[in-house]
Every structure is written in structure tokens, then in C-alpha cells.
Image 1 (cartoon, rainbow, N blue to C red):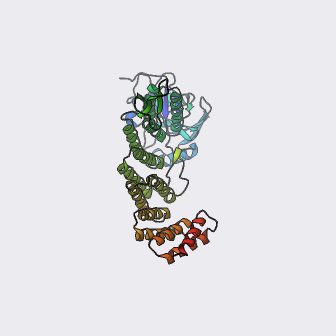
Image 2: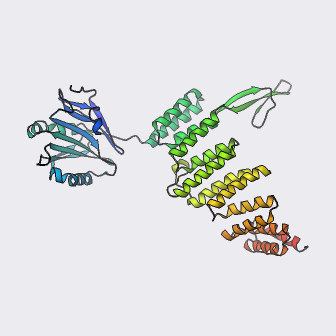
Image 3: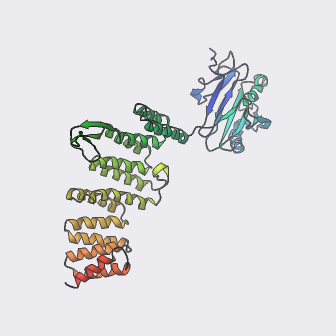
Length: 443
């Protein structure tokens, strides 16, 4: 049964270029019959079918490595030479409906290939389009071959809608909805963004941040806490508060989205770090540390082409950039200044020392952890390692001096403070070194 024309034109998509063509009079354009042969746009005479017509046409875009038409045609001729022989080149040429150049090569039947064919090649921006006309016999070819140029004359190039442009449109609409406080429309928009731009990391990042920060207003008689709004009566007496509490389930949703994003975009370190931050804010240190370990494992295996915010390359080599990020997570716990949090600081420092043995700061941090629990020998070993890796910071020498004082090793303490003062006579730690040396004179 002959296929029916469903539309007057058909769009042919490629990775870098797309175009639209229309069927000439007396022909059908069919977007279904050729799909099984990876031909999404085929044409044949009316009252016939794709499988039985004596002459057919199909349109495609060349593979993305081909951006120049001449190079593509040269490659195609070489590949088909054994079967098709040498074609008659450029038997016709002209311009498409929107002014793009095309030319036609003819491939007569040979002893090894019975089809009579001609191919129209079109130079497109960053790509090559081609339309093949193929006939079962010479008589059909002579009757129908003129249809190819008629199709070429209908061709219009379509600017490919990049995922970047698509993502920017969604991002713009998202900001508009936030400004309008149109909460009911935000979630459907974020879902659509992820569905329609599946290779856009910002779709996942924006969605996760939205859910993580999603709050609901709660008015109660509870005294106001940090960040709450105080409610008072006419006399100024506090009667309650307005708080902004996280929507139930939204934090888990945010985490799930970033977990998914780390598998889709593992080269985006900002996503790994964002996920670790979510766990940190949720008080889930076990998963925070696990996430940081996974990030480190990936970066050790794939040190090139790693990305940060907005897909930009890392500002420093990975073996410097990553340990510095790890240290930021450790210092979050160090600043809390309590024994349990210090253990977490030490675990992150240990991970950093193991994976980045040339990163001196990690050894210095670990030394300070051991000093904090009065394990002076271990503290000195680690501080010495930090100084050995990087002799420039006076801080490491100051720390070695202070640890040596605690160990009653005043001779070495004096040496370390003198070295620190010599290294930075007017630096940040110069006054501390001078004071320590004055105190050592009393020993």
C-alpha cells in the first residue's frame, strides 16, 4: 500500500547542521518508511511506496567530522570507487532556496552496481548535507533524475538550537518565575529543563539548589531563633516568631538530583563539591566524606579536562586545585573547635595526605590536630613533613617551634623560631617568633 504524504516538508537533523526540504510536484516526502534503514527523510513518486518505487530519494547530513563539502565528496568517491567506479563530477550546480551552494555528481550503473544514481551535495555552515536519487534502471533514471534538483531548490538551512542556548532560555525563565514568586510554575519548568536539555549540567544544579533552599513560612508562639522574625504585641512584648523552615523532603530531593548529576557529569567538580556541601549542611559527615573520596578517585583517573563553575576549566592543575577544595571542607570542622568536629577535620586531612602527598597544608593541618590532643611526637613528625615539602611558609616553622617547646626540646624550638624570623623578618608571624625567643631565654 502506498504511503501517504503527511506534510509538505521534512527536517533532516544532524549533530552540527539541519535543513528542511519539500517534495516536488508528484512526489511524496515520508518521515517514517526509511527509519529502519537510518533514513528519516525519504521521497518517492506518488501512488508508489518506498520499498517498491523504481526511483527514490533520501536526504542526510554527513558525519560531524565532515565540515567541508569537497573533503567529504573526495572521501565518498574513494570509498565507492570499487563498486561505483568514477562518477561524472559536477554535472550541475546552483544555490538552494536560501542561497547555499550545491553541486550534483552522477554515478551511472556498473557491472558491480545496478542502480543509477546522482547525489546533490550542499555546503552548510559547519556541516555537509546530501540528497541521493537512486533508480533501479536507466529508463526510470532518465525519467525521474530531474526531481533531485527540484528538491535542492527547496532546501533551507536550519540553525541548530544548541543545548547551551536552550539552557539559557530555561535559566532566564526560571529567574523570571522566582522574581514573580510563581512557585507553582517553577517545579514543572525545572522538570522540563532536565528533560529537554539532558546534557546541560545547569539543569541539575539549578534544580538541586532550588529544592535545597526551598522554605515554607511557619508562624508560631516559639521564641525567635537565628534568622527568625520576632512577633510582638502592642506593648512590645515578644509573643512568637516567624520562621522559614525547609520543606519536608526537599533536601533529599536536592541530594538525589546532585547524586544523579555526578554520574551524568563526573568531570564537573563543582557538582561533586556541591553534593558534599549538601551533606555537610545536613549533618551527614559519612556521606560527605564518601562523596569527597569518590571525587578524588575520579580526578586521579581523569586529571585532564576537569571543569568547575559554568563548565570552565580548573584555574589550577588538579593536583593543586582538588586538595585545596578538600582543605576547605576540613577547615569547616576545625573552626567549630570541639573534639568530635576535630576528628572529622583530621579524617579529611588524612584523605588529602594519602591522595596528595605533595600538598604540605594537609600535613600541617594533621600536625595541628595531633597537637590539639597533646600527641606531640606525632605532631612534630607531621609538621616536619609539611616543612620538608614546602620550606617557604614561616607558619610551619612557628608550629614546629611551639611543638618543640611543649616537648621541652628548647634547643630545637629556638632553632625553628630563628629560622622563621630569618625567613620572614617582617612577616605575619615575626612578632610571635620574637616573643617565643624572648621566653626561651628564660628557660
